[in-house]
Length: 222
Ligand code: ADE
Image (cartoon, rainbow, N blue to C red; front, side, top):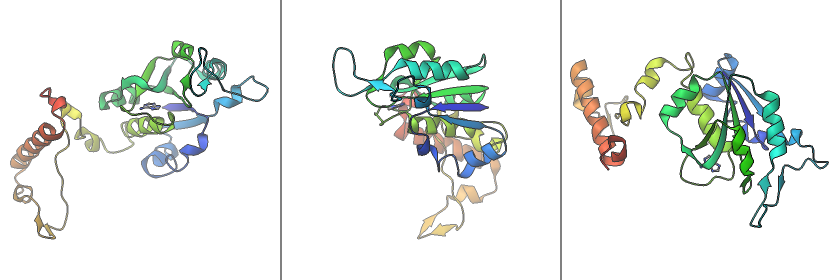
């Protein structure tokens, strides 16, 4: 999969894409990530990418021209164009699965006070990573790239995400490792029993219990 990220701050991605699973996925050619500074597409003599809002108001608004020209330059028939904005559709694991099947993602990171409304006409989807406002779409795009990359076949073992939180609308069950007793805290007996059926039942029950406690909305119980 190819992911093109349109950002004014490509340096922000250093570290995040140069460590751990994302780095390995890039090295193994499971994903190709390009950081494109759309300022390079600005036709303004000073390479401006923003301007004051018509009608007045605070802050600067991203202009159409650099983003339109950049997207037109890189899009193909296979491209899915995503705009990151707090007013987009809330991002969920199901969407991560859908995006992991795409061939080419173009992710536009907004910044400053917002973007010209007409930018919406060239995108396929608008996504929000949560009900809070970030300083820009950069961190949001890292969230999307991270959650999508781990679902690309061969990036992590399939079992690792079959039992992910949110699959079947349930949160993950609790896991334990050695030692059996730590600071007086014991591993539940059933996990030491070797009885796989009982362990499976216990995990399912714990998943449901946890989901009821902290995310009843996932069960439609809220
Ligand atoms: N840009 C600023 N806040 C955002 C959010 N919550 N999701 C996506 N993009 C954003």
